[in-house]
Length: 311
Image (cartoon, rainbow, N blue to C red; front, side, top):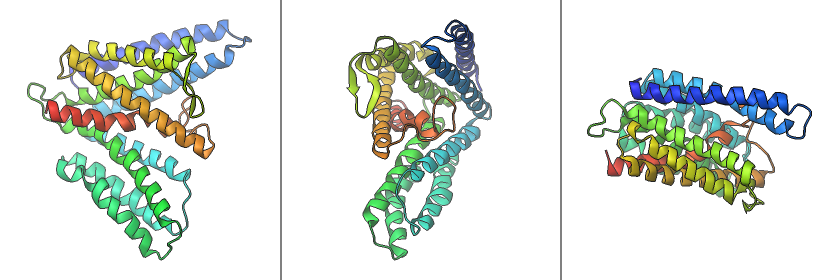
């Protein structure tokens, strides 16, 4: 971990300390009042953020390998949550074995050894062909197209898209040698900040809903306030990136917009399945997919924009 990463991690810890103090004060003042449940939820989210920040910090301390292992585990848990909610048949279990225990670890192994060429096509090409073929071999043709499509989409979004986050550490940018971990930190920070700020702005000023059936809590006021605030913060953090202030703000705007679309898409899937959360793994946040849905859409966009224009 270099000095820039340490400063960013320290800044996050400082914000969490302040949030913890404020949360406890509000809990005491709102005890027995209508706002008590909202404050309890807020404090649960803060405690969960402490835990997630600690895990992420340990991964950064171990360098590239730790980050690859962490996101590999995240992908595995997210994919498990997704598959649990989708209709599969007994004959799909062998296909899923290949998905979980061959394709997913191989995708992250390719990132670890920096094989960019195969990393970018393993899932969208070879896994895309393997999954329906493996299902066909079982001899069960019932709804095979639907079954294969669901598995393929889950693999793409939970593994392929997320794997672009740790792949950032493999980028070689002139004048930015040895600092690629900062890019990963920057991406995760601005995307997660955008989610938090959209939530806070929505609670404060939210009136007009964007898609009330899909996601009742998403409002135009929260969207504009959260995206705008995150963009300003991303621009202010330009010193941790290979971008200048305007480029950092522009990249933040693009990835937070992508993250918003990711959150909206996953909310639509939850409504279709008739559930509130994808799981209960993270107190105050639901399941793993509830926490990384924005990152699923933001990570590949950020990776390829950075690689194309800067690497």
